[in-house]
Image (cartoon, rainbow, N blue to C red; front, side):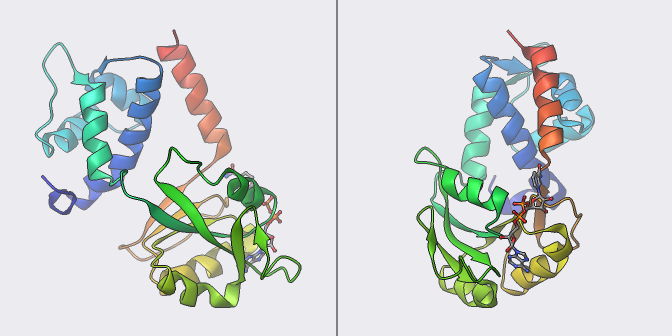
Length: 210
Ligand code: NAD
């Protein structure tokens, strides 16, 4: 089974499964039932079983799913092993923090270009990453073959900037703004909300903590 054969709705859930399996792996958990996973990722267990069945996976009655094999499988499907350039739009407080972090060496992702409207930082290098004027977005996305952007602009600019990124060929947006941006069906948006993340963490401590 390759990524192209997986139904779109299932493919959209893969990063969610992948992320939670990573957390489980880190807590040392070796197996999980579809019911436990359903509760954690808020997808019903029948859907999870159906999704996993597309991968010929792997669950056994009374045992559940093997966390490591699922994780390895998703890693391949999600192409985690290739280096991917992404762009960051909005080099303010949050943008700076992400540039400074820049996913480090053990990851397959790096921010290779940043964009802003602020004259004092455009055409400078911030945390090792060149900051381009936003007017060069489409050009640079094309030139650097970037398909994913991280959106850290003020919410008032989010929709317009997202539309420009999509017009520049972007296929995925990691959206840190509180705005639920509208994009065409062929573009994926992953919203990041630190409050949600903290609640997830607390859920995992309560349910799977050692
Ligand atoms: P900030 O004001 O410090 O930074 C915003 C940056 O975007 C500035 O550098 C500004 O010049 C730039 N910008 C403005 N308009 C632009 C445009 N049209 N094109 C390109 N760049 C543009 O803001 P911040 O504190 O870094 O927050 C950024 C966003 O992240 C906000 O939407 C905020 O609500 C959100 N946020 C989300 C979380 C979360 O948990 N998801 C946490 C903190 C902040």
